[in-house]
Length: 570
Image (tube, rainbow, N blue to C red; front, side, top):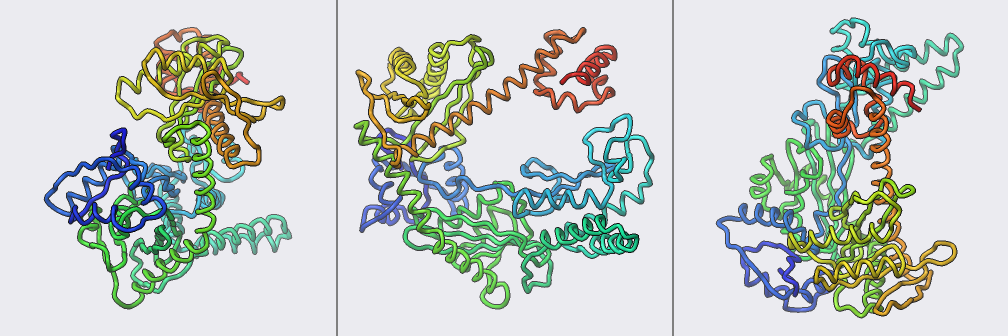
């Protein structure tokens, strides 16, 4: 489905195209569906040979075009896992981007949140003297001296001891905490008998931490099969989805999603399940879904076992997921609706003030520099009143001096020349975080590119707080009530672009500091400097290298000079 600018705003699939299209234009619609229908100007359709082909094509087109009304798959969070590395001396890490891992054999989770995962890693690192460092040093570090490492960098450690630790850790991460808790209890009794009450109290706190981390709901499935359970509930134009992660017959976490529903619930849920495991979640051996879904279609797409249930404990768990989906929607509906109305009303108010027909996409710019050095710009994008982080862009400015107008001229030209060249989607509004001068510069650049896009600025009061819009031609000041939804909307956009730009500026400064250090090392010319900057980026990363590791990438004398310089650097 396309709007008047020929932009794809929705992608869907249907067995009967006529019935599906008619459903959008018959009867009364509310919410997102009504807004979608009001914007449809044209259709394009592709005929395929099977339901599976249709599903695959639909998902690929959504990935390619990111239509604004295909919102169910957006902004799903990834979950942390604990990784036991497959090394001679293993380490424990908390990881998120599990799709980059070739081997999922020693990944455990998902965990409720990153804090819970880190608590488990810290706990196991205190009990088991695993390797903590990423590289081997020439002498043992602090962890060795406090008994949390066996000094693998300098000592030969029995492989059987390492394998035994590894086996016990794996048992713990799979849900069997008996070995670990017994070890702590023995140590606690020993310290208590020696009247070391502080140490005994510390061990008691560790036991409580284990109890907290491993407190998970038991389900009556004794087969220990890793499975995910999907349930859903539809009401008042929204679909609520619940996913239970069951590992070792325990619900270790749940995932929930509540969004406006555009088409029928079966299509929405099927597409969601098929895309769910691209968000950094390991596929289990089996998933359970409600009986009204096409099990073979989902199984073919995911290449895993997909089942439903008509009786017994599995049906109870599916119903429990559906009931939790209903509870979540009932609890959060008013909050979601209020937040959505605030955003929509603020966007509509801005559209009315500016007198424009459409205000779907807004691009906001901010600049940052340090006394004219490390000049950067950031651009954030709001679509339908919400940040679209995939569309954010960073710009490293070529001019290295304190010239706000020159910076604005360069970033606007680079951005919108690229929009023209690659036929990218144009914004309905550009906001520059500056006054009349920056607005005029931006308008001048757009005029030179023969682009007609409205540009406005944000004016500030004596306390450097935004209190007015700068718009129209000639530029007019428009006061904004600081208690209005519009003010909070503008403030949110301003904070978002400022934080994004400052974060990039700090990154560039850190890289610049490293560049300055490398300029002081004899034997490091432009070529080696570029290679080191590209590979390590910051001082911190380079300081983590040992002299041996430096000698692998640099001549011995140069490596020694750099190592000593970094050692003394504050």
